[in-house]
Image (cartoon, rainbow, N blue to C red):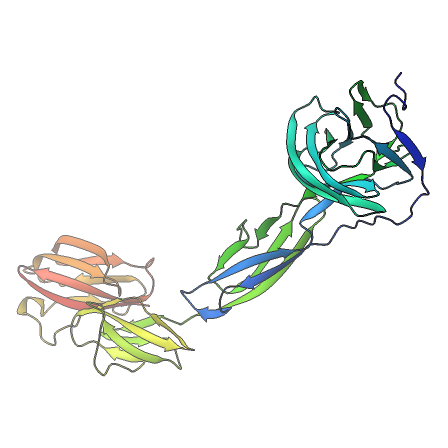
Length: 405
């Protein structure tokens, strides 16, 4: 059994210091910072940034029961280590070690996996050690990944400038659960001293974000009206939320078509009808409705509530007042109808004609060739609207409107 004398270490009992070290877990905060206006026109967007505040690291293990002092040596081969069991998984970002009396020098600070210095070396750095006088709990930044429930050790080796001896704060007898203190000298390692060092450890807080729209980053893009909520968590002691309202102004771009006349649904707006072929404005077409003069595709540009938008393009076919002779007896009946109607006549000479039917968007919805006499149609499942029938006999064609109610 090694004795304290062979290690040239002495102890002096100190009064228990109540309230010397108070560490509290700072509550984290999160705020949404918009990178632009929160009210905008449809088609625009705003970037929302979640800014988290509060302590960036959380205290994990500690022993603040400072009731004794250890006179440690700086002779070659002398050092000490304190092991502990991590309570949280994450990055060990800081350890605080207790010293007393004047110290101004350097030391080698290492973090090992396991108990003692035989495990995997996770961190090793030369650090400055300065204590002006009295009692000092000195912080040292480190960087080592730890896992909750696993054992790790803090190793301290005095270097240049450290006085001989120097004072180390300890608890005697040690009560730390999940760790031991060891004194190292050229003769070996002694863990039979029954005390623990005054120390604490911190785990860096890693924040995670989740938005109500499903994004999992610190930023999200808002492009629709609604309340956007972000929740910041660190899976340890923090879970906070913030919300912000976004308003998107919509322009009513719906248009009704009746024959060759298009009518915008939007009221209280300004209107500019355009020819979709080149998106060229139609001179003087600034009313809520527009009657097409020529066959083509037309749309309206609207300005409403400070926002501008353009409707879909609608295909309009203008019908001549007079038709070629072959179509004189051609009938569409009943018209209007609820979906079932006939096209043709009873004159057998009007044979072998072709029918194409288009919706208001100019999309072909039906085609029939080699028609004799007349043909029955059933558009009961089609939406009520105005359709256009193109009927060809030989090399001539006519157009007829079909109204489905």
